[in-house]
Length: 260
Image (cartoon, rainbow, N blue to C red; front, side):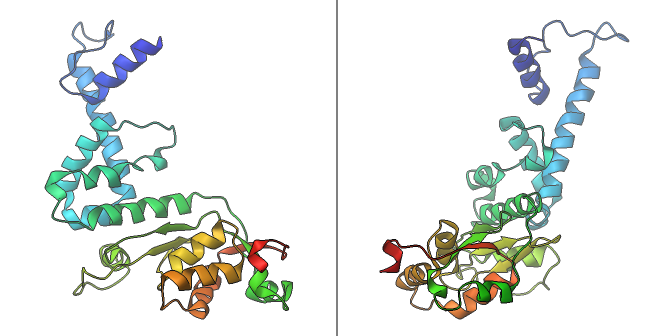
């Protein structure tokens, strides 16, 4: 099948108003319109169900009917680009942000971003985290100069909204209750072993982790986070790093500008 014919077929498959692909025939009918319509509906329904499976909290917030209608529009505008179906929907948060009927739910795109991050964490590479005693023993004299390699499953989602709380209440992780929508929450998504975990980062935690992930030594990463967030607590953030199993390897101190 030529590339042009493939493109025509894919377009007709997702657009119910498009003409049938050229040369389409049916072995059981001279008019394949109905059979193609059934096939088209099955494909769209399958992609919508994939989105429902990946974004269950988002669906719960808006309701099944709203989510399915929105997802169908998304499928038409954003066909899959990968053979891996679990990756489908990375563009959904951006689509929601521009989707006028959902405009009143300003936090919804970030909740969807959090759910997408959970899927990426779930399918990231398996790496064994270091035990806390092993980390301390590596450089007892100059811990601030250590550089860390962080787990490939780690995902950070920053938001102006309390997305961890909203997600947890709509994912069955927390009881429903009042939410202060003015409180910002940055989310840490981790998968040290088998289960995907979601944490609300302490103040400055996102900047701290991003610095560590980019190779900045521990001491310099803490100083950078403290400069941006006066309430940054190194002890609390390190405790979360260890609890979430984020450190998979360390690099010894090196003579560079970070050790001045």
